[in-house]
Amino acid sequence: MTEHIPLLKKGALVAQDPPAFEQIDELDDVERDALRNEVLHKWRQPVALYFTVILCSVGAAVQGWDQTGSNGANLSWPVAFGVPDTPVVKNVRVPGVDYARNSWIVGVVNAGPYLGSAFMSVPFFQLNALLPNVDVAVAGALTLSTTTSDVVGPYSSPPSSAFCPSLVQQSLNRGHSFS
Image (cartoon, rainbow, N blue to C red; front, side):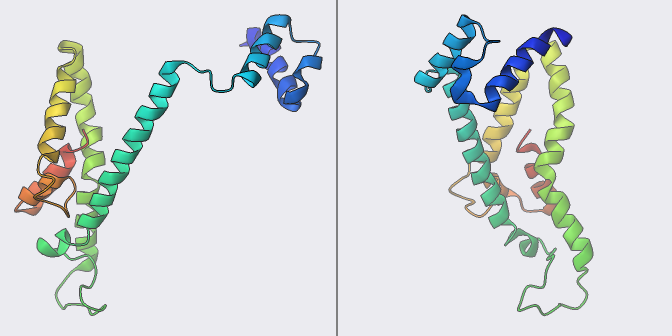
């Protein structure tokens, strides 16, 4: 790490007054040319950087879309499966309903995508060691299986949740949807 100290000092000097980098004696001509090029051609970056930014932006948009679907599904599926986690009608508690227990059930089902990612990542890593790229095919098949019924299940996330007639199937469907 100590071999990088001179470079870190130069970076700190430039960071103190970026427009005055031409007057910093510690910089050599190659470093000044690089800084000058960065100022004059701000958008001249590698294509891979632009591709990465665009890909991450699309991924974030898709994740937000799916999260919106999950939030919308939470409005209807707990009642549909008989596990309301909040009073349904004007804050009137229905006798005999254990809202605290139901809240835990709703939370576990909502955590399904993240739990599925955590528990399925280990087998996928082991599968990748044995058969490279098979894990990508399996993950693609699972993703396809959870997104093919977009028209049928508009309030469910993932959309194939519309085909889940029980709470267990709903939990399993959500659990493998992000793996």
